[in-house]
Length: 488
Image (cartoon, rainbow, N blue to C red; front, side, top):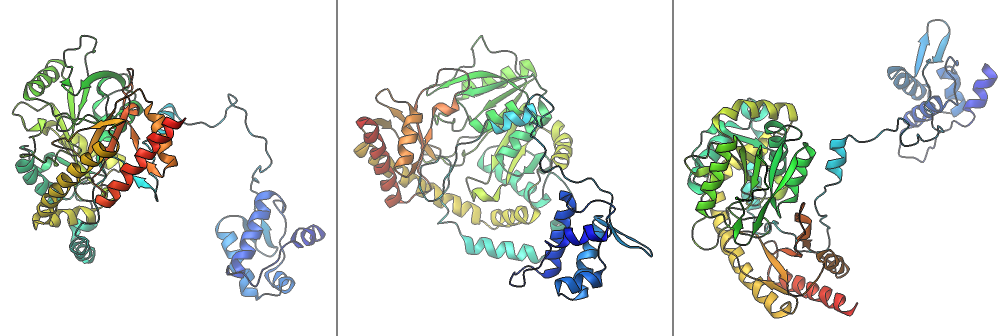
């Protein structure tokens, strides 16, 4: 046995020029030898003194390595007989790969649905025309960082312990007050459920309010993130067709719904606003079928002519509506803080669901958002952004008419953070996106928002995050992409 050990440890050495401590090098090497089977179970290891002499290191260095292996169960000390390799199974590093269909590890059906429905990629270092991206350069970072630092130093129990999984009590109360004025929604703080962004809200709604196989009316075209959340939960999607004129709520082919997903304040991707007669009809449909309406108010705060349109949830008989809001468009996307406003009978269910799914946003961020709103900085920032986005939209549309008029029609819209570019000639928007990438430009195709019917082709162009110089660069890059396609 001694001869076997000398052969196995001949390859054990230490690199004195390495930044890694020598005891760690010895530990890693012995651990690897044991897992690979180069040192067999029940093998007697050299004494710490003997190994230290062989490696020309201090004995304490070897003791530290042995202690770590002992703590992790790789070796065991036997009184009076030394240190031995524990009887563990070695990893099968050379085992052949399992063939598909023969017990291979695979994703669940839900997992496959999730990974096969990704959002369009966003690439750093290129001109970005992605929709829904807010301006960040004008954000009051000094004020925000001061508030965040103050909350970080606080020993307030409400910032250290989740007293309510549904969110920070102060922020929930502030949202309830704010949403009453800004979106016409009358609710209590208890009805506000704070989560990690609008996508988390969609996922939570899918888990709590529908069963696998339930019918979900999904706007066609409609937001891809919502579609993915519903499909991952096992929904049968039924296309609720939308045009620039409105929603086709009288389609006889639509099955009785469990959920109805809509973006009534600024339809994605058309930017259409749902008329009052459509809102009342939709509420009546939900009442008749006992269905829930999911109102995604992703950028309803941004209206450039007149006041923002009141939310569907604000109508008197809207107890079938679950409202989704987010601070990702009005503050910073990376905050990942959104919220739901649920009917009173769903409060307890959603509070418990958040505790199970872990979709609660960090309390420090929630408290800082609360301070930011209560001290008036949110209203000031939002007002500034509305003026800025209105100017940028007008400038953007003018540049599109000057430089892209041969290929697309882009018209102003009273709301939203993006505009629809409709093609003037038969073009495949996926081909346009590919050509744009070659010009260093990221754009989003409209056809990806269709899930059931023949898609309309076009582009959804976000302009709010770019200044005038950047907008011009983006428009000229898109022009170059169209010219590239013309030459093919």
